[in-house]
Image 1 (tube, helix red, strand yellow):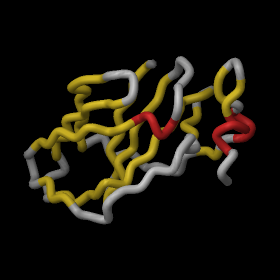
Image 2 (spheres, one colour; image 1 turned 180 degrees about the horizontal axis):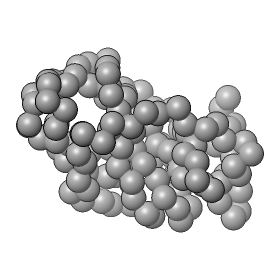
Image 3 (cartoon, one colour; image 1 turned 120 degrees about the vertical axis):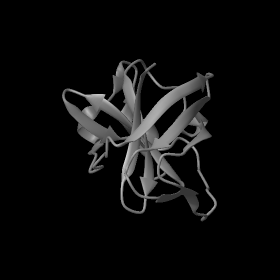
Length: 128
């Protein structure tokens, strides 16, 4: 729904009753480290500690933590990605920059960026 961003974000923050609870099963063996941050982007260093090679693409989404539950956030603007696969061999690391501007101005809170992979998800929590 194109207007879901404007329905779910109020003057005092996110309206929990209009958000969808996350079904992400975050695997903690993929370590993420915040390498840098600006107002509209986040640099993450992803390290594969799974004990096997991992494939992932450019698909990701942002979630917010409210009252003990993670919720998916709607996009403010369209977000297009390349349908491509990256291999991250066991034990290797890679840095990626994620453009957060697709989510508009985020109110203060705890957020995580979830990288959608073929078998696992990785997440990073940050306080804005």
